[in-house]
Length: 90
Image (cartoon, helix red, strand yellow):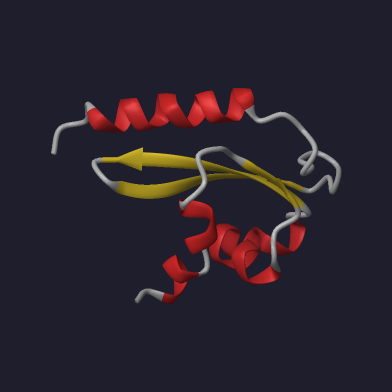
């Protein structure tokens, strides 16, 4: 029911990263005060014990992250972050 989480419902069902421009709403939720300078982003799924999160990397270059770029390295980064989070003390 969290409106911030609702904005990313389409993303959390993905198995792969998403690259390109993001909507203004998502941009503001992810990057806050810096959102005006973010023109493209990579959204990387992070999973831990049934919970899904997003690792967001933003760029001021509108062509830095595009929808046609490969995401293998970003997907691997998400896997590594997820595994590292799983070994942190609770």
